[in-house]
Amino acid sequence: MQEALIEADTAETPRARAARLVLSDGFQRLVIGLILLNAVTLGLETSATLSESWGGLLRALDVTLLCLFTAELALRIYAFRGRFFRDPWGIFDLLVVGIAWLPATGPLSVVRALRVLRVLRLMSIMPSLRHVVEAMLHALPGMGSIVLLMGLIFYVFAVMATKLFGEILPERFGTLGESLFTLFQLMTLESWAEANVRPIMEQQPLAWLFFLPFILLATFVVLNLFIGVIVESIQTLRAEREAPAREAKESAERVEMRLLLQEMRALRAEVAALRVAERR
Image (cartoon, one colour):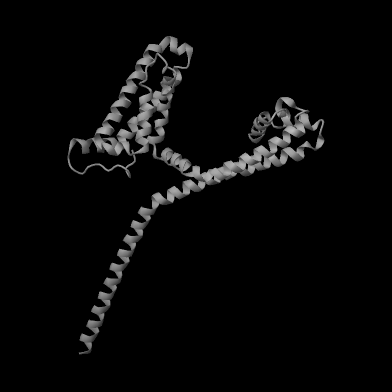
């Protein structure tokens, strides 16, 4: 829970003490430790050997951790009441922990496999991760035009590739869908030369005139645009978070300067008065 969104009551009440406990550094470190421990236990459960030997202990530890996470959420809800449900990170934690309480049998048993999402609670606990996620969400509107540009590039090149190379390499460029997937593979630079370009260049030596511009556009231009938008979003949010502190510092400096000027004027007045007294 962000301290900027949630302010503990100043009165000495049980709810205020609970709020201070939840926001304390020690409590936050404890929750982080429990989340990391839960991540380890969930990973160990994927091992058939360990599950056979220590399956009972791992399941008991998982249930214990789930109860602790539930108690922690209950404490936060008690401390912050309605403010907890107005915080998106609080709703996220509630959903992630609630999924783990789904029954292990029946139609919802598959959904219970999502209990590993509890590890994602690190994003809501650790401020650095929370800021990165908020920056990515803040950058989504700016990514719309980049996604549209990438879609146009992929569509144009996929149509061209299907017509140019569909007969030479039908398993990769035989249809528009296969061409789109192959171009996505080219964008990631995964086996782009050996599996895709060189077999075509054996029959069409000038095929590199098609593939190299696509790789330059998709990999080195469009993807860097995504990175640029995210970096700009991170810088913008950081500036917004630092703005109140910067304004408070500037205001304190202006007050200090005003007091200093007043003291200098008073000192000049005293010096002037002393000079007048000496002349008399």
